[in-house]
Image 1 (spheres, rainbow, N blue to C red):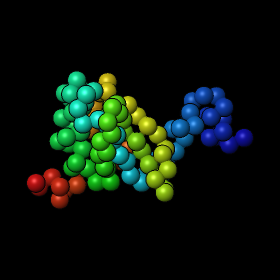
Image 2 (image 1 turned 90 degrees about the vertical axis):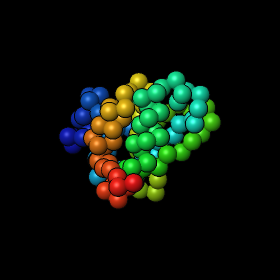
Image 3 (image 1 turned 60 degrees about the horizontal axis):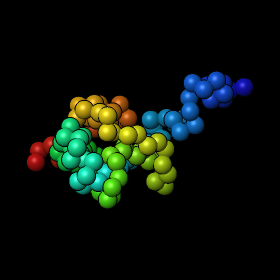
Image 4 (image 1 turned 30 degrees about the vertical axis):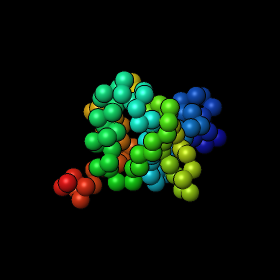
Length: 110
């Protein structure tokens, strides 16, 4: 039995997180523009000010949607969906960096 199968069978890895960082091709943040985002000032600052600076990351505003980071693989296949509601601004940035995203030097100049 392979090591990955052992981890899956024992519950150490769930199916949704059984991917490699190299599998992540892009990501998007899905969130409403107001409502719940206005009640989360740290997340709102991250979404409006920090997220646009990252390469391979898109912000998509969906009415009524709670803020979530959606990691995408080949063909925009959804790999994982991570809630942002309980995170502070710096934790949101750390999460992106942990997943292999970096601020674009070109976007940082503006």
